[in-house]
Length: 581
Image 1 (cartoon, helix red, strand yellow):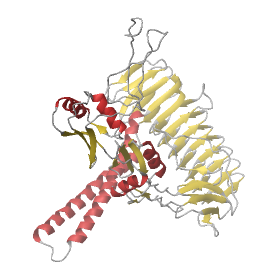
Image 2: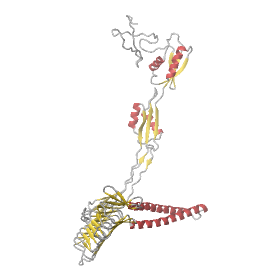
Image 3: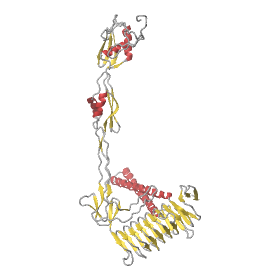
Image 4: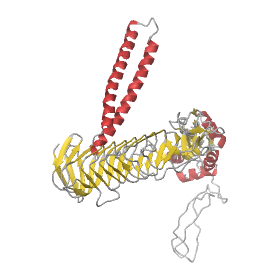
């Protein structure tokens, strides 16, 4: 009790410096120091517990107690404070053992020893991922023992086989911190696969005869415009050879080989072009002419320029591109391995091009055109046109015979009056025209969803696959026979090699079969689009399903669904079934 009968309230604790602290007193006018009846606390603040000492061996701290009658009772906190005072505070303390030791110190009448703490070194754990591309470090902090050092960690990495990609800065920071959890301290080097050979065209204006297809299989057609011309020596294309790639390496030092890029040379036969004498990776024009972009190269086709094709010029047969500034008059023929460009009209003439045919005027009086690529003209009347890719007529087609292996587009230049009247129009995937048919003409025939050339290739491929399959089966049977009866003539190795080759050939054909089947499946999405409507009699055929149209239709599209039903969908999205599956 304080002077004046007031009770003093406070708290006491052992600080790190073993100083005893008191809380604020209720009576602010006085500060009274609490005095505890601990004879074992010296005035210097150093703990002194008679008969109690610590011994350390092999990292284990043993409390030894001898009975001392004059020693005041001890508790767990006092023993813990004594451990800290004597330098064992960072060790792993066994709290249960310390409590037990305090009890025994107060009750045991004989000397005893009890392990109360342990000095533990830092624990280093290295984990290498299954792919050997990363190694992580975990450090369990030391408890009074030796801390992890950089040499310790490097030695542990070496013991785990980690010899490459070590991040010594990360290791040093982890050791300085004293602990770490799955810290990445080594990374392998990823391989860099090589790049395939790349061909870069160096001429902005060139004819590209490789058709570009969208997801629906339709050709993305664009007007080519005027004929581009290059002179001899003009740089046409640069080849960047394939690269071998950069090897990788695991953290264990194992080298990872890259996948080399696929190399390719310029195409074997490029007419009108040659590799530069100074740079084998540069393709230059050997002659003046029209540059034509092909796979892995550019050809330069000579250009034959004519004012007109008539009786004076005679029929034209040219290995290259023919440009006619005027007309091709009645009965005249123009045959070219490249493109044919006519600035005027074709009046009952015949054009045959390995590339594209482009006519600025019209096709009249039973003109006949055949192109390996596309055919474009302003209009056609009574003409016969066959195109490997696209037929595009700006205005209209009247009483024509049109066959395209991809699509027919009519009336883009005349969206309101463009029309297809009479004759036959057959396209594999799409016919688009503003107005189809006429009340003043005969029957207009339209066929979509068939590709005779593709179907013929598919049929021939199926026959070839059966033959290849039979060859592989016979070789497989022979291999089994040789294994069963012996191989005295050492034929097994050669027969096995032949069988493997047969399997590869057969496999390649099966891949080709899948590609052709995909292209044939595109025919199921074939459609006829009319932006104005349908008039008069139209015989529509989807594949081999005839659908005669004998009434008018507004703008919309004709298509066939998965159940082989022929449908008409108007612009509002209303669907009507024209023919059941």
